[in-house]
Image (cartoon, rainbow, N blue to C red; front, side, top):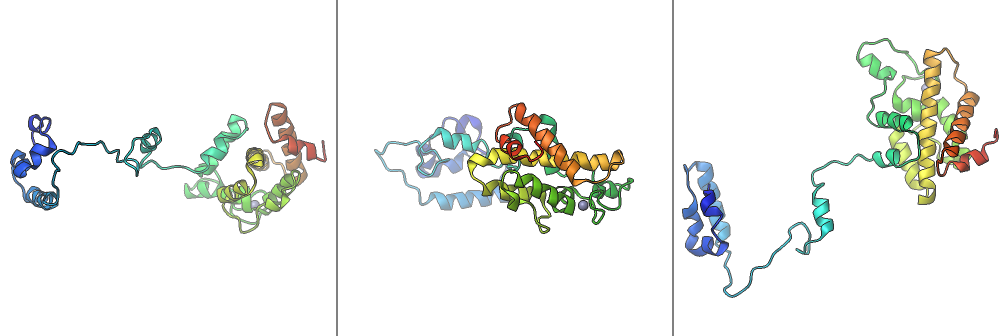
Length: 250
Ligand SMILES: [Zn+2]
C-alpha cells in the first residue's frame, strides 16, 4: 500500500527513521491492513541500524548467504514435483516405442481389464496369461504367476534370477525401483534396458493372446525376448550383450 513513486526511492534507513514507513502507507485502512501494520511495528521495534556499518548483500537461497550458481539453479525447481521412473525409462537403451509403453505403464494409462471395466467396456474377466486374477497392469507385469516365471528365466541369463518378482510384488514400478537400486551402477543401465525389454515382450505376448488367439506360452515369450535382445544388442544397446551371451538358445 506504499505508492511505487515512494517505494522506489525510499531507502531502508530513511524508512526506519522515526517510523517514517508508516506514513508512506496510503489508501483505505481496513481492519486487516491495520492488523498487519501493528504486527510489523512490533517486529521493527527490535531493528536498529548501526551507523557507519556498510550494507552487505545476502543471498537467501543458500545457507551461507553467499551466491552460488548451484543454489540459483536449484531455486528454479522449487515447488516442482519429481517423477521417479523418468530416469530409468528415458536414460535407458531401448527403442522409443518401448519407452513410450513404459511411460504409459508408469502413469497407469494402459487399457487393461480394470480400466475397461471402470468405463463399462468389454473386457476379459480374468488375466489372459494366468486365468486366475483380475488383469491390471501391475498384475500383468509383476505379480502374475506367468510373468514371475518369465522374469525368473530372463533374469537368470545374467545371473540375477533371484531378483525376479515374488507373489508379494504387486507393484511393478516399486519392484523395478528396488532391483534397479540393488545392483551396481555398472549393471544398472543394462538391467533397466532388460526390464523394459521384458515388459515390452510380456505386453506383446498378452496382446497376441487377447487379439490373435495365441495361447500363453513361456518358451514363446522367452524366445521373443531373446530375439529382441539380439536385435537391440546389434543396434548398439549397451549392457544387453550379457543377456545374449548367456542365451542358451543362441
Ligand atoms: Zn495373470
